[in-house]
Image (cartoon, rainbow, N blue to C red; front, side, top):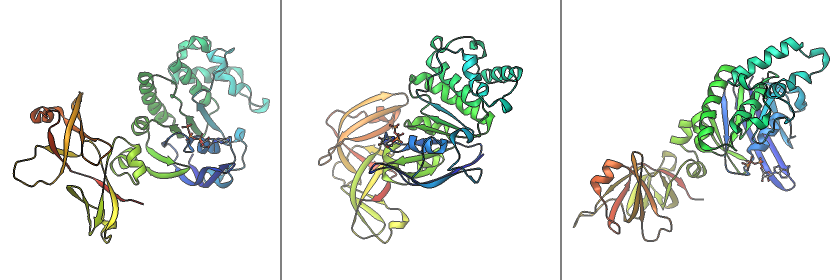
Length: 356
Ligand SMILES: Nc1ncnc2c1ncn2[C@@H]1O[C@H](COP(=O)(O)OP(=O)(O)OP(=O)(O)O)[C@@H](O)[C@H]1O
């Protein structure tokens, strides 16, 4: 079932937690809400769930207005980071809970409940833990049981708020791949909140980048990574170097470099602009005596190797931040820079935004 939110706004006192947010999520899509702490991700999820009422705007499920539908009738399944299982109930009883509390008229027979719970426990691959209590499970197992419990009532949409946030990095990685496979089997619309960009880019069909109550960009992981729409998205998704300059006639002229500006800035004359360059988007060489060079002269300070890459830090006069460069290890070894040595770095690729 598809989810649509239209022009949602929500304020807490004078603080705008959501400011005119619109979004469409297709049935079968797994969408990540990604952004820094406090940007409104959870508020958006809670409004979709029906746990929070918007000041303005509407929520539609399968094209029908659900804004005033009570949380119990929305058929949403949700899993929160600290959504504790019932401690006094076994795993089996936890998963069965949502079915057992249904009104008598629509409550399934005991035999149907048993079958359904075992089916769900098999789905999350933990049927062998049915008789245990939550305190006898690992954190990852608890989250998978919480998910099984959310799925028991056959939700039309699945909402997950940092479901793996409290777990260590290795377990998180396993669980998010597992979530992807599970989502593909279930084919519901799923929305999960995260502030971990790697998690969002790896798992989601589309990523919604949020900042200060607004959506900055919506796109596939590749689109948002390769073509960030705003400086905020650039800075949020991975490391990036910034270079100030003046944009005129289709070119950003900076200190020692020039970079073409996007077509929409072709007519701009003498506007202040910033170029965003990822660490792997530089060529690095030694300045050659007597020749002019096209590039930024910077002093090599240090480097470390990690996997196939070398990460270099260079300083340049007038720049408070070092320039961060990533080179293939073999190239770094060929160059073999010495500490304090001047090098020339040249952006191969950059995205330019006018500076407000
Ligand atoms: N019930 C509330 N009363 C007052 N302020 C609230 C309430 N709920 C949320 N806020 C504020 O609204 C803003 C958005 O909160 P929200 O929980 O949606 O952010 P988030 O992006 O999910 O953040 P995090 O990643 O830290 O969970 C925050 O500044 C928060 O303090």
